[in-house]
Length: 326
Image 1 (cartoon, rainbow, N blue to C red):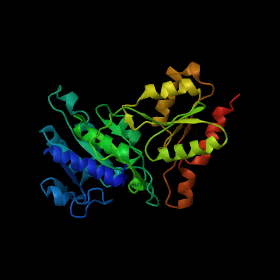
Image 2 (cartoon, one colour):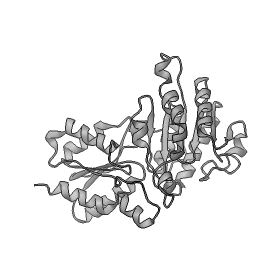
Image 3 (cartoon, helix red, strand yellow):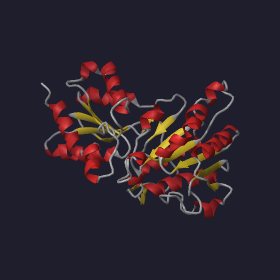
Image 4 (cartoon, helix red, strand yellow):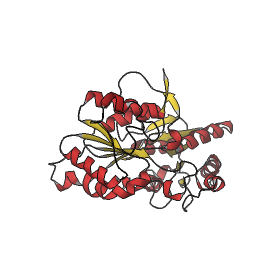
């Protein structure tokens, strides 16, 4: 099977859907003439022209509102944020318009729109460009929130998101755009709301999503050296969450560690932990442990970044705690 970059998988997904459906278009800052801030949309202006690949002003509230209106009237916009930190400027359109329109209109208006772009830490970009908003948007009824971890999942999930009749938040990572992975040539879609077991195991369940899957899988490799077989689950979407896959795994392993880049308060990891104690309490041999970023704004200094984010060392310590809990 061919190997392509994460950014190429996203580009293929958008291009294939634009060829399939003339109502799909891409809009955002630098997506056209500059080929995308991260070169995700490279070549798309040449193929589809300025009527379907739009450069916008630095005005997220404005072009997000245009996208919502277009979606209500039969089009299928893809709105790219250079980073989801900038989506805060447009959050009224996302939360109060896109997410709520179907309910407020009594089902008269669907809003088939995808808001996509980079989330979380991307190196030395400072606190205002390094936040995680997966749990923010997952808190909103009416939205679906997708966070892929590899090129194969990214393409299949983005195609499914573009075809979905509900608004979808599709969150990527600047640090993953160059990641390579196997992606088949043919057409495929992945269902939204279905987790994937990336590694089978019997001793402990490690749950994660997005780029923290790298930490999860590397931790599992290290644990295997000590004879501990971790089952690693990639949630892939955090609204809806595939609770059933997590619960069934924990019933087998009896232990769970959840890795998430976001700060710990009101996080996706908190939700997973609560659900397990409600639905798998009798199977747990130890309390669920979360590995989140420290509860502080992310610094610019690389040493502070490393100390703040979840890492393999903290994950291994968490697994040892749940494995050897008396």
